[in-house]
Length: 159
Figure 1 (cartoon, one colour):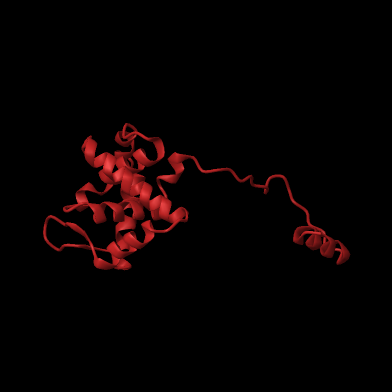
Figure 2 (cartoon, helix red, strand yellow):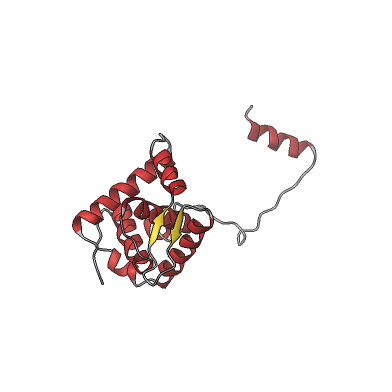
């Protein structure tokens, strides 16, 4: 008997009755690539990959890099990036991701007018160690770095 069957048998012996109304029932479904790109942790990893790989990376380029790299990662093309760049939600999530990366010490934003984003030694070590992993996280980081290479080779598409 598996643990689920044991739980049902125990609940039945204790006269526990569970009722579910049809309107409260939610179905689980897989997220589409369009929904995935707006998750702040994915955007934070994307921005960290850019800061890790680029010599110069500025805050004004946040959503452009994130849109191009996530379009390459999810769709295999940067064509959808033009629509993503206009997304206010993507701009807001990029700002949230940057604040997160700064607060954990993975990146530093310079105080001058250019607002350059630089990966700290801690952030670089995090990416280096993460890419060595044989798990899903390591694969995601390697895919993000590969997407960065594709976007950089093709040129950062502009609006």
